[in-house]
Structure formats: C-alpha cells, structure tokens
Length: 273
Image (cartoon, rainbow, N blue to C red; front, side):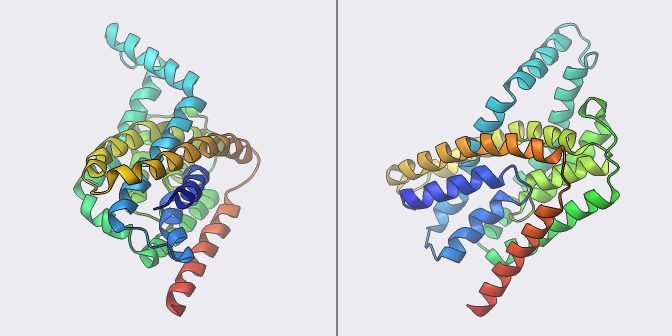
C-alpha cells in the first residue's frame, strides 16, 4: 500500500465510519473497483487500525460528554451508588451495548477477516444496511431523547451492532437503526451510537496491534498507516458534525439509496469481470 492509496482510504474511512454507509464496505470495494493490488496481510490490519483515527475524532468531538460520563461513573462507584446519576447510567449502558459485538468479534475473528477479502459478499451485506435503515425509518417512532435510554435499549442496540462486524453492515447504520427502532430520535440514536464506538473501536484497534507487529514489512507500512490515521481523524471529525446536524432535519433515505447503488454497481462490475 502506497501513500496515495492510504490517503484516499483514510479520507474514505473518515467519511463513511460515521455516515451509515459502512466504512468497511468502502475499504473493501474501493481497492477492488480501482484495481489496487494491496497485500492481503495489510488489508485487514490497515482497515482496523485506521479506525483508531476515527476513534480519535469521536473522543475529541465528544470530549465533554465523555469526561462527564467518566466523572459520574467514578463518583458513583466511590459512593457505592453506580446508577444514581443519569450520566453514570449512560456510561454503564454504553459499556453494556459494546459487549455483544465484542464477544462475537473475538469468536468469529477468522470468518470476519475472510469476508474482508470478498467484494461480492461485502456488496450483499451493503444491501443489508439499506434494509436496516429503511426499517428504522418506517417503524421508528422517534419520540425519545438519549436521557431516556434504559438497559433494555442498550442491549438491543448492542445486539444490532453485532451485525456490523461484517464488512457491508454499517456500524453507525445498524446502531442508529437499533436506537430508532427503540423510539429514539435520530440525533439521540446517532449520539449513543458514536459513544458506543469508543470502547469497541479501542478494543479492536489494540487487538490489531498484534497483527501489525507480525507483518514482515512493518517498517515500510508504517508511513502509509500514519497518513491513513491522520486523514481519517480530520475528515471523521467533520463528518460527525455534519451528520448530527443532518439527522436533526432529514430522514435516512438518502443513505438507503446510496448503499443500494454502491452494492448494485459492485455486483454488476464483478459479474462483468
């Protein structure tokens, strides 16, 4: 992977990690459509580690929220009243919501890595993202704020996130849809979705450090990884701000159309090839 490829993929990661169109799908499909021959041992590691760039964007954007949550959790534990404060409860619900996908990701790691090398399978999963977003718009009532989230909501959204371990199923799309199906407003569902990213993406990134250390050409790969990381962080911050404002006024159907289009184009090109 050269510097230009890493820059392009980093920008794509920054945009698509937060928009409900599946960043993993775009990181698989883009090299396929452009004919890039990236070594397979680099693909999965780059895809996961560059997500740390978007994780940095989340932490910076939601730094005040995260500090309030952490402070409330610590005080709650100290006072032996871990669920007394609403911010503390939100923190514990975020942790609860990350557990299902974390467990499944560890158990199915090999199968997930194989899916990252199959553009056709990724395209089919992208249709799944379009379906989830459509269901959320059709059946979601959007009457609740993030302050009303319960442990049942968190568990439901966490189970929805399990779907996103495969490339093509958007993490933000599945969790936002999960929140909306529990009657959360679009911006509230997105906010909870983004907060959920912190522990799950941090864990995935740390686990991939072992894969990174095992790469035979690690020294030559690090500059590309750094470029992808920085690009994803900067563009990701902008994408979060834009999406939260967009969801305050607009439905998700534009992303349904986009996911359907991308999936169809990929399948058609793969058939022609």
